Length: 116
Image (cartoon, rainbow, N blue to C red; front, top):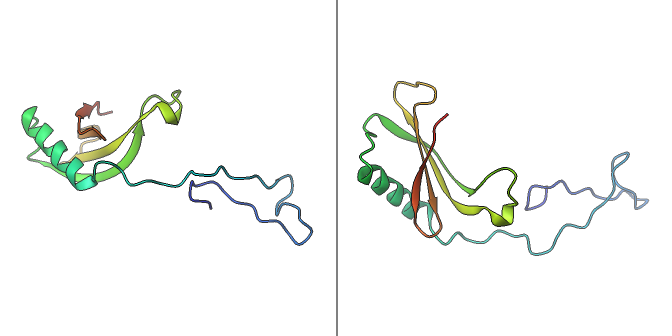
C-alpha cells in the first residue's frame, strides 16, 4: 500500500501489471502527510473545556476514540472539508447512541456533533 492508502501494483518480469485486468498507475506526487497545526493533546484540552463550558455532563463518560479527520458532507471534495480532531466519548452504561462527539478544527474551534 502507498502512503495514501492506495494499492500499488508492481510489474511482473514482463512489465505487465501483477493481476489480470489491472494496470500500473502513477501515484500523485506530494500527497505525503503533514503535521497537524493543532496537536491531539491540545485538541483534547479544548474538547474538555468545551464540555465544561457547554455544561455537558460527562461524569459517566470515557474517551473511547480520538482521531484526525476531514469534516464535511460525503459529497464535498476532501480539499474543501475542514481538517480537525474528532473525539468520541462513550457512556459507562454502554447505551447505544448515548455518546459525546466533539470536533475540534485546526483553528481551535470546538463543536458537538450529533450522536446517532
